[in-house]
Length: 261
Image (cartoon, rainbow, N blue to C red):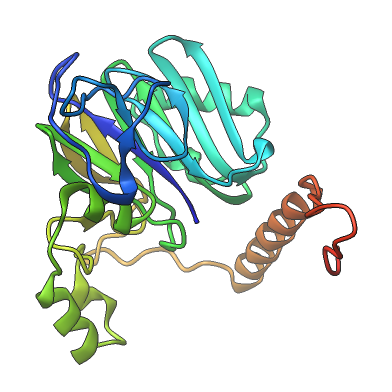
């Protein structure tokens, strides 16, 4: 298992008592923005700090070095991309300056499968993808907002109870995702809808859509079917090329890694 975990505090240097479960434990290294019962710095178990206070971000789990990239313009303007992303560092830097002005759509347009997080001062933007294949979750915590790419670490963090309404909707209407809305199996842990971004400003959260939505009152111009099919094919080919261009990782000496494309 691996995920991205971050926290945005309501004020610089804000403290909180305790962090529980699999999502957190006391740690001597890295800056976490909160302290434990004995005043120690806390951070997620097995975490790799990507940046520190007042809005720290960690990569947790067995991320490979080529799957974690951070491009920095200055100490308070940076972008982290986790996963396989076809953008070069220079493209990430250009995208960072565009995102500083509020543009978000281009952060999800590169080939690959990844999660992008942008920090501009005290504003943190976490982009979900259009399909919801790489979800983003969030929950109030310690006077701010904690977020992650998995719901369970956040549920452990806040010791959340089960959301029986979500589970009932899942059983009653398993083929109707809209019935679940932004809920998760854990009470108080919410999911960012596909095509939206989680925007945090000093701990305050906002969910904003970045994909243009056509008006139902005005008919959209008809698209050429051939061009549409060509566009989908080109996007799939570029995504496959990006995946195959990623470094191969052999599990170890004497271990068969299986077929490699």
